Structures are given as structure tokens and as C-alpha cells.
Amino acid sequence: MKINLEYGLVKQHDIFAKDYQKKIREINANLHSEDHSAGTTWVHWPTDYNTKEFLKIQKLAREIKESSDALIVIGIGGSYLGAKAGIDMLAKKSKVEIIFAGITFDYYDLGAKLESLKNKDVTVNIVSKSGSTVEILSTLNIVERFMKNKYKSGYASRMIYTTSEGSYLYNKAVKEGSETLSVPENMGGRYSVLSAVGLLPFAVADIKIRKILEGAKKAQDDLDNENVSENIAYQYAIYRHLLNKKLNKKVELFSTFHTQLSSFNFWLQQLFCESEGKDGEGMFVSPLTFSTDLHSVGQFIQQGTPFVAETFLTVENSAKDNTLSNIPLGSPIKFLDGKTFSEINYAAFDGTVKAHREAKVPICIISIDEINEFNFGYLVYFFELACGASGYLLKVNPFDQPGVEQYKAYMKENLKK
Ligand code: PA5
Image (cartoon, rainbow, N blue to C red; front, side, top):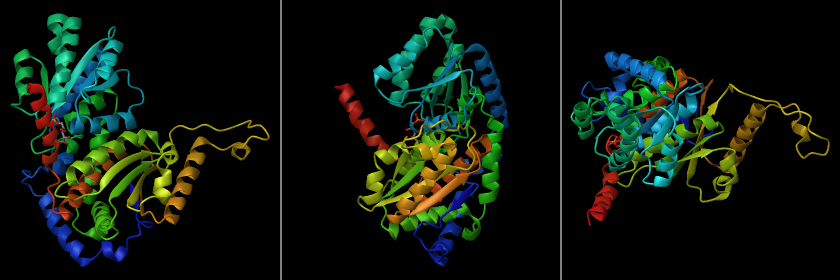
């Protein structure tokens, strides 16, 4: 993984300023403390993960692959976005279809998904750290009925609960004899993708989960360093802080020209917005996929209110490609004859960077050599560490989400009437 801050419009010596180095030393000590009660279990996770549970995940995945055509994953927010990011980025040859549910109260969506599974064999993975989220329990109520109709008393062996020990869902699973996997203590949803929350769906989709953890471990080793000059996660965190506080940027666009990374950008949106957006602080994060979004919001980026910065996620080598050929004379794209799709994609990326630089949009480019499990694990750990540090630089708690509670309170009031 590489990061290029050359076009960031932030001066190198500001990133490496003594004051930031001093703050980062404290932040690094907090994040790497052996006391994880602040919510930092994920920091040591690539070395500390539960190997027994890892083997259980692999065993369950094997069983699901033998018994099922589809896995319904019921989860929301951090219990969903990381898993979706990994599936969309890495799942290539999955025999089992991974279907996400619990993400809205829109029955049009859930009903259609269940209808499509009428004649298929299904396993359900319910993912909820708290075990009490209304979206999850409501969806489960309907999915459970579907499973009981299909499998009668055998339904419980097709339900796997990923939740905290002692939660309502955990007790339900134990009572009904269903399998459980854990959401580790002091690991908030948006930091939990490398636990069973993401690993079970990944393993079912034939994604190499050991390689993901190896990538994360490499990032953990590379980034366990309090020296800003040697730590790209802390450089990026300081860069973001300068964008926000010095250049007055209010929005960070996560832009990619690779559709496989689109869902990863949605995970990043949650990671940063939920971690930093409190006490009147933080930059709003917006995920974009190009070139489609260039035809919708590109105009704003180029000439609109100058409050955006842009972080590109890019891949050097595409796994799949095709070449344009036999373009007729007179076609407006005759000059593309013989060019590959990835050459055109690169030209679009390079042209966009040039155009947005001309418009004085600060640009950061984060690149990986190819899309694979190792790089996914590395990126996840890199961004989690950068986000933790970035939140602490803003003096907010990056590991809670008190603001999410209010809508739930009002929704419950409405439904109790
Ligand atoms: O990141 C978070 O902590 C949240 O987005 C939660 O994951 C989300 O609210 C779902 O909560 P739970 O996993 O308890 O159902």
C-alpha cells in the first residue's frame, strides 16, 4: 500500500511539525495500551485473535458450503458494511450466494430476497454486537418464520448468531441450540470486520481469511511506530486534520475508479463519520465511484463551494481486461482502437486528478498493487489506525456513537403509541 500526499496542498513540514509529533506520541501510546477498555481491541487483533474461534469459523463455513446455496447475513452499520466491503472486493468464485438483510425496514427489499430463496437451501448469520438492534430483531422475526416454514424443527441448526456473550440474541441462540460466534469485547462494530463479523461471510464466499489477517498483521507491524516520519497512517491522520483545521475542508470524498472498491468506500464513510462526527467536529465523508459519479457530482467538485478534499483509492494492476477493436472510421472514439479498458480507466483517473488539482482540490492518492485478501487486510488496519488517531487529534472519542441513539428513541416512541 502506498500513499501520495504530493497534491494534498498541505506542506510537508506542517505534517512533520513537532507539535503533531508530540500529540501522536500520546495518541500512539493510548491506542497501543494493553488496556483496551476505550474500545481498542482491534489494535492488537491481528496478533491476538482467537485461534480457536478462527478454526470454528472455517469449520462452519465448510458446513455451510456443503449444505446451502445462500447465506443470509442479517446486520446493519458496523455489523454489515465491513463484510459487504470484503465480499464486493474479494468474492470471485463463491458457490454460496451472500445476501445482506436487516439494512432497511423496507419489506419490498426483504420480501424480494426471501422470494428468490424459496427453492434454495439457506443458512442465516445474524450479526449484532448489542443483540438488541431493532432492524436486526425485526428482520430476524420474518426470516425466522421463513426458515421454520422451510426446515421445521431443524431450522435452528441453520441459524448462526454472531453477537456478544450474554446479549438477548446470545441467550436465544443457546436456548434454541444454534451456533454462536463472538463479537470481541471493546471492539465497536465499525472496527470489527476482522473478527467473526466479517470472517464467517468471507470464508463462506471462498475468500482466504488467513491471508486477510496476514495483511492486517503486516500493517500492525509496519504501523506500530510513534514516529510520524515513519508511519503513513499517522501522516494521513495529520494530513486530514490539517485539511479540516487549516484549509477549512468539510468534506472528504473517497473516490475510486474500481467498482470492486465501491463498498469499501461506504465502510470508510461509516468508519470516519461515526468515529469523528461528534462535538461539532469531523469532516463528512462521501463515497464516490468514477467515472459514473463524475457525470453527477464532478461539476461540483470542479467548480462548486470549495469545501471538499478528495482521497483516491486506486489499484495498479487490474485482474480483468478487454481491448477495444474494429472501431469504425468516423466513430467519435476511433482514437481508442486497440486500447484496453484499464488503459482508458487509468487515463480517466489521471485526467480527473489533473482537473481536480487545477480546481485546487487537495488530493491524496492511496494505492495498492492489486485487489487481494492481503491488501484488504492491510487497508482495513491502516484506515482503522488512521481513524483512531484522526479522532483523537480532534479530541473526540472515536469509539463511541452517542448520536445514533436519538432516532431509535423517537422510533420506539412512535411504535409504542
Ligand atoms: O459501528 C457501530 O458500532 C454501529 O454502526 C453498529 O455496528 C450498528 O449500530 C449495529 O449495532 P449492533 O451490531 O449492536 O446491532
